[in-house]
Amino acid sequence: MKTFSCSYRRKAFSRANASRCNAELLCYDGDLPAPYWYNENKDKFKPIFKLEADLSSLWDTLDRGTSLFEVILNPTFRPYKYLVFDIELKFGTTEVEARIKWEENGIVKYGPAKIHWLE
Image 1 (cartoon, rainbow, N blue to C red):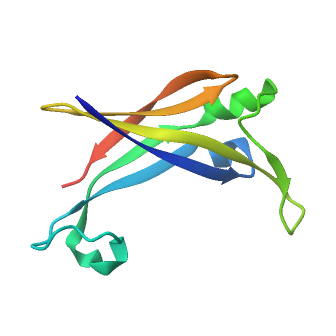
Image 2 (tube, rainbow, N blue to C red):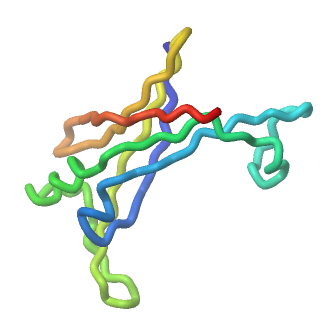
């Protein structure tokens, strides 16, 4: 099984705003080697699946006073928080698994993520 991970930093203004994370995995389907940049050959990238994760457990850690979020004021003086997490994909021989990963007080924690396959 091979694991791939990508880090995300997401701005949220409220718990409701932070509760869902959606991402899409694209596959390159061109004749030439895959380009380094997506915008070099956009029409040859096709979505394989959409990933959905509930980030509310990370929001709850803020209520316990951890440092997962930074409270920052934007130009409109509306407070927001940054949520820092990874999306991990595990590729086996016949299946793909997904989960979110974050660190809380030096301890690595995991949460579920759903894969919605596209036709």
